[in-house]
Length: 637
Ligand code: ADP
Ligand code: MG
Image 1 (cartoon, rainbow, N blue to C red):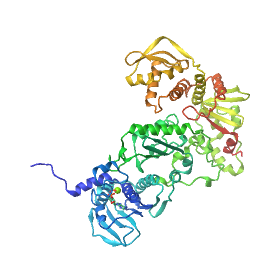
Image 2 (cartoon, rainbow, N blue to C red; image 1 turned 180 degrees about the vertical axis):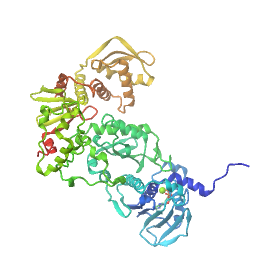
Image 3 (cartoon, rainbow, N blue to C red; image 1 turned 45 degrees about the vertical axis):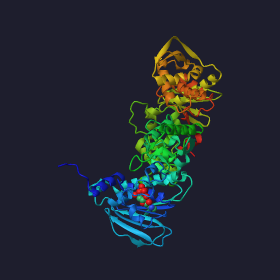
Image 4 (cartoon, rainbow, N blue to C red; image 1 turned 90 degrees about the vertical axis):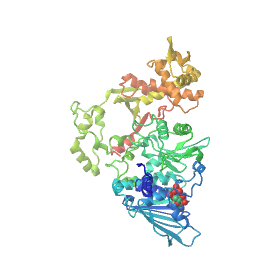
């Protein structure tokens, strides 16, 4: 006798339910999406115990007729598509006709619905997939669905649910995704009878971003917009200073549907390359409007993944649109004075955001764009304790005498407490990272005398007429070289170094094609190459600036760069690309000790470049601290 048997319907239904309903937030997603598909302009969500006990969604959409009501809960029954071809014309969020059936299978569900033309509504209750007869009910046009005791009949799955607050966090996240995708819908969210959000309809998403992520982030967003062939892209991306430690603040919507896409996530990281510290992730809210036949949303039951017909084009569009936005905006990093508990009233602090179930504000939010806050969140209090024994603990160098005077009496208590604990002056002096290295420099610059030191072998700190400036030595040098090189290319005078013996470099076929295609522009930069049979390229001269780089390394890097570049291979774009690369390679690096003369020369030439605020990648080269800001921070004014 055979061992293969058809599964009973109830088991099939439960397996199917498992694909769609993982946790209360999945129910929230399906119900909210149905409401939006029903054309609702107002949707109210409420949950209890993170949705484990209740998820309720009420909408003012088109409702269902009495005949349709039981159909809505029948597996694979939908009003959203009729024939197979419709799968490639989908304009609704749902289409698989399985969500309601699946949810009804694993909960106690009640649905009340009324179409505007009907006098009475209809009510259906279903427990673990078993429906009761339909009854009349009152209520306004629209639909209310209540889902109670999720997984009550599948106890094992119920035990997989996390704590109420964790589940509430998932629910809040889901709500935010849908609210950001549909800003013109009035949406409210109540958790355990408390109103968490009441989002009035807005035309843009910025207001909603401000509500979910805070005003500071919303105000720093850059607008991006483009249209390439059939695809429109629009939305906001975060200023590089607003980075996060994970990619949870990257929102990508395709046709009003929140999706995750690794390749587009990668395009975003590429766009921010050089602008963010390693391990940091950009923030983005990007909408794509793409004809339904060019995207397959039927990849996964929850439709969180999609497949693009021309993924490569969309990758390029996202990358170049974001890059373009950076090029045309001022990314100058201003120092934002942090909240200083010794000076400011605590009431000045923004209220914590309740988004995503967090009870305290996102810790990352505190760190954004702020030099002080990232390293010393509460002013003095986070200097390391005085454990450093090797330094001159008692003999303060001259600059240390510029430490602020003790604060005025109103702040005396806090200061004293701190002083008792840490011995302020000794700590500051003993902290090796604050000691000048190699030594202070008098710089006879352009009519000004600058004092500067190098710290951490990476930054230059210089005194300016009205404050001080912290310079990223690599970023500044890169910028200077870029400007100088660009000027020289303009005058046709880039120095090149002719190789004694031209060097053949073996590349792959696409690599060879990529560099040879740009041969003329490369020659203007002092890199002369020619085909040498097969995929070998002969290098006869290299830019003098890049003496330390082997011709092979240079060609490979260029080829890599060109192949991943989204810019068309026009002369200007190639020139721009190569200038960036050459400047980056030739510039001094971080963690490189500079001789006093080198520091002097760098600071001196800083004034030669037109925009020394940014390195060619758009990263800031300098942070400016005005004297007024310093005095405010130290409570002098
Ligand atoms: P799908 O959304 O994929 O069609 P669902 O199981 O989520 O499948 O819903 C089944 C059907 O029930 C929908 O096609 C729609 O006709 C109807 N429906 C569900 N929710 C609502 C609602 N809030 N208002 C009106 N009709 C609804
Ligand atoms: Mg649906």
